[in-house]
Image (cartoon, rainbow, N blue to C red):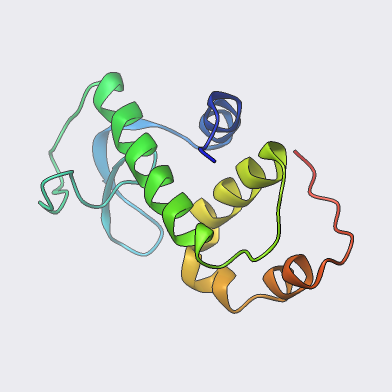
Length: 117
């Protein structure tokens, strides 16, 4: 599966996009929708600027990375909306937080879970 355009648009509506680097709540230089490193691995620095197109690309790449990590964690079939919701969720809490979560345990056990999306 892939992260859908619907999922991407959902995430974009809920995340602020800043085209000039800023310090996030942890004091880390961040740009776009929350990027701390560029595609080449360079760390974002205060004073950096990017275009909207670059911010969108960085978000897509980050979501693709999250999706790859999720594929190794989820052991049951999920539908597209559920996958999109989980990518969005992990974008905010991190895959590491999700990996040890009760939510993941419930998903893999087949428990009925309502993911609002």
